[in-house]
Length: 220
Image 1 (tube, rainbow, N blue to C red):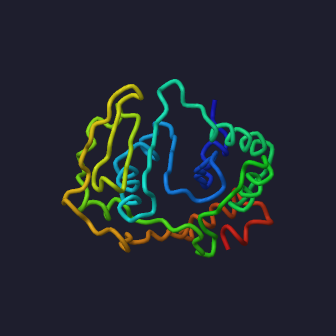
Image 2: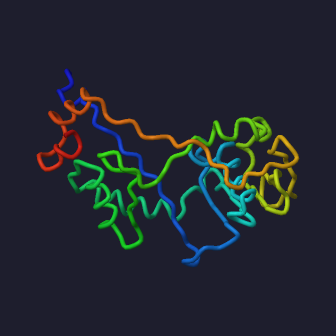
């Protein structure tokens, strides 16, 4: 059977990243995180290096991050995403602002935060952390990270991460920092600016996907 024209269409993607805060509504010195085992977003050396940087710069005194076991990866963010998806499936969207509105309307626990606007305005900066850490962090120190489930960083032990494969194991220290010390205070990586849509892509979206009320915003 010959596929119809819609089979070949490729709409614009929108990535959604969710963080669920179950703690008290104020800043704390000690940070406790839980995440799934997604290596592309959470469980990788760049995330571990960033958490260490936060303790080196004094942003947090101590940070612990624990990853859910395989087969037990459903927790609060999945519930929030589920509420969003229920309304998203029943709503026609043509822009990131439409998606943000769906998030806001989906539940009182969901609050949208746009990363940027179509005119190039950036609300949440993206930084080149991988290049920033390349010369100061040991890039192969966390071999076998997929088997590790608990990580702890402390300002009292700069340059070292304490890891456990399971909650019953004892901690073992792994050195992440190349040098014995690193004055990370005030240092920040280069910002990565989002690329604009090329004109050909704008025309494609204009013709095939965008509703009339969003055409001048998404692809002016």
